[in-house]
Length: 121
Image 1 (cartoon, rainbow, N blue to C red):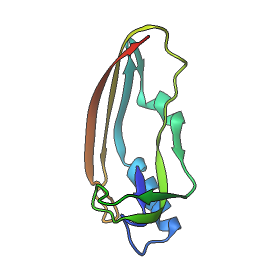
Image 2 (image 1 turned 90 degrees about the vertical axis):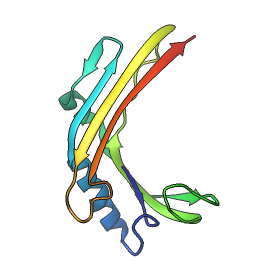
Image 3 (image 1 turned 60 degrees about the vertical axis):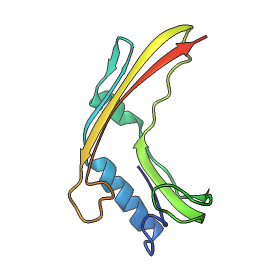
């Protein structure tokens, strides 16, 4: 989850942190599989990391409806780093969902089901 002061104008950095935290507290499912190795939500939960605030510069015609210029941003989410992969073919499956019905929720209902096919040479 990433939120900036351009996504939520006139909100303090503390408010942005609360919104990002609420979003990730609302995760209902989380799953990762790399080839035959599966990671449960419980295993993945130790990789949840909120950030301090930082600045980004949105370009002309940015996506997601924000405006061009410098913005304060915070994130909260799950960040997985693996050992270097050996040469070969890999299938990575990642699934997650959340339900966040409160007014401050940026995405009240969200789900993703992603499949990557990697060839490591």
